[in-house]
Each structure stands twice: as structure tokens, then as C-alpha cells.
Amino acid sequence: MAKNPAITLRLSEELRAELETRATRQHRSLSAQIAYDLDQLLQREAAGKPGRFLGIFEDFASSTTPTPTVPTDEDIQEVRKLLWGTLGRGTLGRRA
Image (cartoon, rainbow, N blue to C red):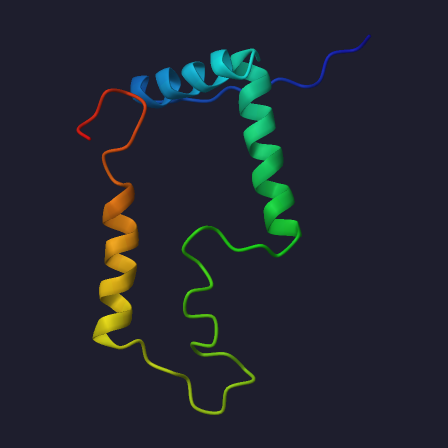
């Protein structure tokens, strides 16, 4: 069976450790985990599915909206809460 072409990447030690941890949990090699993660990302993009925080202001500057809605201070506070709530929850022993 022929092997797929190889790609060389430069990763930070932290990113490599995180990927290795994910690969171990999923019973994959590091290479298979990176390929899986990239495939999932590309499938999500192809399906037009936004990431976790994208789409919150979906109508902002939309071509179907005659006058784009400008996010309010409350909208920005909501996004900040969402973003700050996820910081520090990494798997590398960072602050919780």
C-alpha cells in the first residue's frame, strides 16, 4: 500500500504536547490526529458551519440587511464573556 505524501511542520512544544495528548486520548498517532483535525476543520468550512463564536452577529454587514446592525455594548460584553469563559481551560496544565 502506497503512503500518502509527507508534510513537515514546525510546531511549538506546547502545541505538539497538546496534539500528542489529544492523539493518545483518541488512540491515534500524532500524524493521524493532525490529519483528522484538519479534515474536520475543512469539512466544517465546506459545510458553511461557523465556528463557536462566528454567526453571533450574522446580520452585521449582510447584503440582505439594508443598514448593517452595529453591535451594541451589551453584544460585545456577551462575546467577551463567551471568550473569557474558555480561556485557561487548556489541557496543558494552564491556569483554570
